[in-house]
Length: 277
Ligand code: FES
Image 1: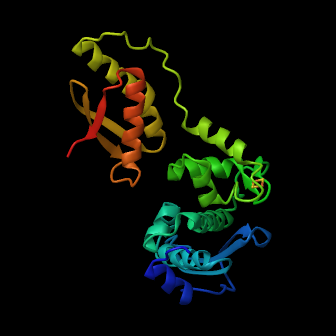
Image 2 (image 1 turned 30 degrees about the vertical axis):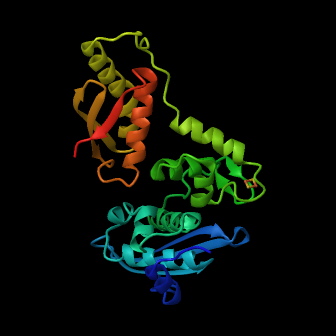
């Protein structure tokens, strides 16, 4: 049995903003009833201010799908379209006090419906690339979606991808392909610089750590709108501070762990990476 928060239970039993808007300015429809979940989001938009003044939804799915749709409808009201586009699937889950891991795909469906509705209003196609490669045929999940959701949510295992997208949760035939995608997303390029000599002086070690952070670590964080600053290096202890989107990120411990792993691989097995307390 999954543990649902009181907010999820309340939003499921008393969903806000259900139904449709007859003269909606934007409609976003995602999911597939055959695959188990579908959501249709209706938005009324003030043309002058660009703000969403009303939102309603119709959904087919489980308690989490209904709760996520309800949360989304509450979150978008009063925001401009650009502000609304900043709402992530994690924001939807957080609004509900969290969702069971296996149900995170419901929050992803909400985020997708929002993107689809705004694209509809702006006369853009959604998804933007119509000929995307389908990786999971059981749930009609494309490579683009897996890449996007994995990067946005820092997913590193096939099971996590299944929780967030359903891909891989049926016959399982696509799981090796999902794994290959994850390896491609998270693989760090082999260092173009020479690897560490066996015995390093302190100065050599500091220089090598900084070089690896600049060449191998920061570009990956910056690609996710995050960043990292090296505060100090004392012997084998590297003190850093996360910046940008990495600040306060729930996955920051995992990020620090990966940085440490990389520095241990390329500099010394004794490196310890810590954040400034
Ligand atoms: S093809 Fe992905 S689970 Fe069947």
